[in-house]
Image (cartoon, rainbow, N blue to C red):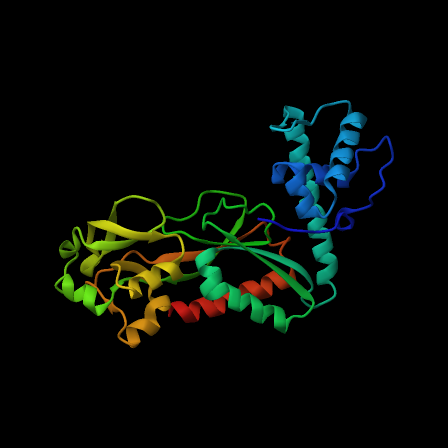
Length: 318
């Protein structure tokens, strides 16, 4: 996830020769998080040469080596890792302090960094974020796409959206469930007819399917049916993508049976361009979660945007 901010956000730039300044620790955290000086420069707006000079000065002041770098490798020493953790905490506390000061102004203000899976951005969150920015002119939204996992570049986000059917791993993040999206199996009427209009999932064995990411030639689909019955079906993947809109377009093109959110394909179902395959049987619903560092760190803008997401997601999933 790429972000850009000024170092003035973190405190005074000038450092006395004998002090380990807070903003130098924050710069160290930025460089380590980015995996190098070039990427950190893009994030912070501080030149690569200046970043390198500041870290070198910090090493000289402390009498330790924090980073091992050359043209090919970038490694963090053991003491560097320890100071990196301190830098992360200083950065979080500084952000919390500036958020508190801005919130005292009583209106949404400042930068809100949101990380979200590509499929949700293209279909829902991009529109919601644009409308929110228009309604709140003092808020700057940075919307970045992820691969849809809790670990996908979340260290610089104020708010992270994650779909997860199996729950989320333990972390120190605050977790809020926004909505639960129902999924259905869909295909064009022609594809459904060619498959014999299957009623039970067993009839889908070997059917042409549209997969989610991956390169496997066959995938087992887990489906839930009446009376909480569960079955697994072996499908033949003819086309796959990690983007739900692309999967929807592939289904509309007649490439096979697809697993899609009901809300996404509802207009095509109503127009008859797609139909539900094996009615009553469907993939498990997928909850959408919002993650953020702590209730103390989330700004007024973050809280209001979260409330708007919850409202609109609940309407979509109804």
